[in-house]
Length: 345
Image (cartoon, rainbow, N blue to C red; front, side):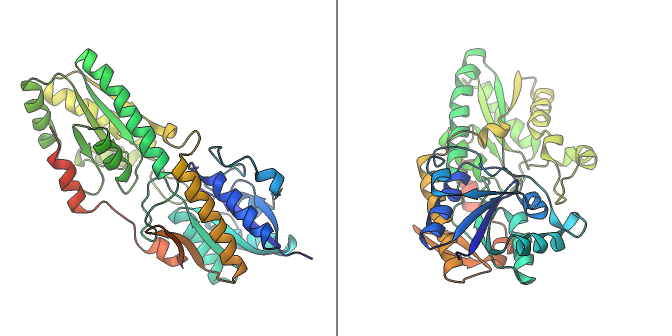
């Protein structure tokens, strides 16, 4: 009788999750396993909600965005007897091993499950691209191209109406999306969480630009940027089940637009790209990367390499300890920030 393996997708969705599911399912079946997917992340594992994954089920999902398994931000640590329920499900469904697709919160839980005796492998997932253990996460390429397209489109209306536009992009702790999309889209100012950029300095750059022959500006800001003047907003912001501030409550793009308007008297509009960055079909690169990540996860299970996570190193898919994924966050280095800043104005 074939051993049964499971896969789940947890946290925010990212373009490329379905390719991961397809790659994992195909390779696992090729290696002689039966495959099931747990629905809605850790919630499905805790409650025992599954879908059988077959070659027929996954043969046409590579081009689709989102995840056919659904996702949630359920935190097993916050569910009463959460880990006990997970092990109960694994035993009752006779699950040999589990692949977890998610970011640092998800892999943190995966690490703890592995330490408690579960056979777990990880697949890194975050459009923020902020996991230190891998060169790039799937979904990032799609998101920066969507963001760059938004910058290009905002520029035409900014030019037409002689306005300043503040575009808020995703990036809780790291500003990779804002930096790369901003530079590629030729934004006039980029603000990211890693480096302070005082409001007064930012406004001076804008004043000089508009006092010259420029009649519009595009400012890109990562959602995780916190200006000192936002202290009151931070205190009032809600938190998710993992203790992360709900960034939608901060509305840094709107805050920055209002501050610029007050200090410069320029016409300013704020745009939050939001979940559009997560939506739609994945790029060719993210489809390819997702398939490779999924297949590698199935190989790790087949080889008995548990407590490991798939990782892109250069052009190769390798494996690293899961704990490495949550040990350190990958942030924008100073040299890249200074390069971007040299283009401001």
